[in-house]
Amino acid sequence: MGLRHPEKEMMATHPKAVGMHVPRIRSRSVLSVLAIFILLTVSMMPVINAASLEKRPAMREELPGFVDVVYDQNITDYRFPLATEYHGKLYFFWMSKIKFNNGTIAKAFIYGRSMDGRNGKYNNKTFDDPILFTPNPNDLIGVSNMWPTPIVYKDRLYLFWSSGDSNSKPSGSVGGTDIIYRVLDGTNWSVNNELVSIPGKDGTAWEDARPSGLIYNDKLYLVWTRTIIETSLTYTKIVGRAFDGQAWGDLKELSVPSNITVCDSPFMTVFKTNIYLVYHTLNAVTRDIDIMLTVFDGIKWSTPTSIYHVASPASEYISTPRLAVFNNPVTNKEEIWGVWVTFGGAAVARSSTDWDIVGRVFDGSKWGDTFEITPPTDKGGDLNPGVYSINNRIYVIWESLDPTTKDGQDPDIVMKINDGEGWSDVQIVSRSGDRDFLDKNGEHNLGKDDQLSVGVYNNKLYAMFRSWDNVTGRDGSRDIIVRYITDYDNDGDGYMDSRDAFPLDPKEWKDSDGDGCGDNKDAYSKDPTRCVKSSTGSGNEGPFAWLVCLVIVLFMGLVAALIYVFERGGKDKKKDEAPIEEEEDEDGPAPTPATKEAAPEEE
Image 1 (cartoon, rainbow, N blue to C red):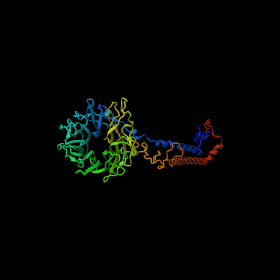
Image 2 (cartoon, rainbow, N blue to C red; image 1 turned 60 degrees about the horizontal axis):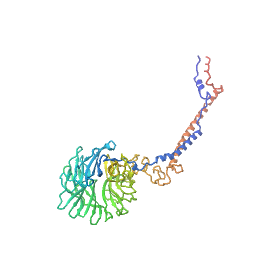
Image 3 (cartoon, rainbow, N blue to C red; image 1 turned 120 degrees about the vertical axis):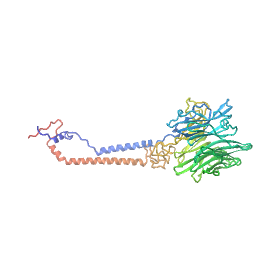
Image 4 (cartoon, rainbow, N blue to C red; image 1 turned 90 degrees about the vertical axis):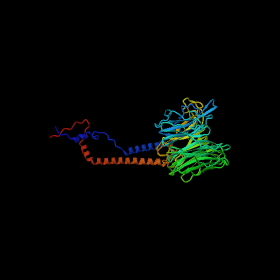
């Protein structure tokens, strides 16, 4: 058998040798593909921009739902809800007012229960059974047990309240109102204890109410309002005592001694190394009203001074001062933020029929100017404010009768949030419109939301309030509602949603000119008539979009140039090999696929 020639066999199967057409990439084809790609890119940009700039609904529609704390209670009225965190649970306390004998007799009870929300679920199944702290009050008008105040001290939960109920007092004393407390050691509640009033002189009686407390230098400090009732004169003052876990210290009078001044609503906070105590006063002679401040340095209390003064206002409703310590991320200072209620004719109020929430900031050395927290368009009553600091935010929450901030015809709970740079819009905490919710029977009763307080649980804020909205479907029943209100950062860009113009876009958070385009993408961030966003392609696209297109064009051009150079290099190589191909071609046409194997050469 003769020798085989592989090179000739390879030629017999080569595409050119068998007459097949070899397609070639042309520069014209590259440019056509490039043009189509550019057109598609430009046409899609408005759609991409519109999607990325889409805003979500208002925050009040995004807040988690409501939970009824007294869903299983058949009582017609609840008041003074308060809560605190203890041993992983959120403990609620409130006063229940129950009427007897066809409404001619009413008794006040102190109740409590806990909620375990550590699994992230909040519903009726997460509540423990209610606890009754005043089982048989000796009461006729339903005001003998009020103002429950919980405080955690040395791993124990203390519950204080004001009581004129002789059956709740260990001393059994009749007349007067004292501060009563019980202690939970983690498992069991103690019996009632009493901060017995110091006996007064003949013809006087004490009424102790509105306790407020905190922990400072490993002691529990409790302050409250004491009303002195003499034969022909009634006045009030702020008093307090300290507890070291074993015994209570002496009673201290903390307000300016006076028998013509009414003092009320004491509140304390710890700032740096001192206790700051605020309360409001009314001079019975001049009718002047003040927000007073006194400071305790661990040794003595300072002389009270006024941080807000109104001379003979149109109304005497300047009240309810509250404080919160705020680590301001903008000023990089620890500050005290104080808020309270003021009335028309005072400070920034505009009319004699308008209550407003105002505040001041203390930076450690001086108090700043008074500023208004309620909106400039406010035209109604704003009451019972609270101020809280958590997660580098200040929350101010209050009851509003203002038709421009509340929703529906009845009072609502509203709030504003400050991140150190500015305030969020007013947000409704209570159910918007007071429509049915948590109402299994589908019944509905328009009502109001009031009796506000806030508790901290799992480093989050929870608002509690009394609702008249018939949320449980029980006619004539009011309820205590709790809901989570802490601000959040949905897109993780470091800007909380209340101050983020684009809460679902991690690349945008501010829109200076209000045109719907984020400042980071908006080449005209101060011009509301021009921006990146364009839903019609009407020439409103900014230069950023065309810069992107230009980069794409240059890239595709580079790819086309590389392809062209590659083709030219291939042609030059074939020209160099042309004499060999032509020499073979001169011998005759290349064999077809049917051509048999060539005969071997002779030996």
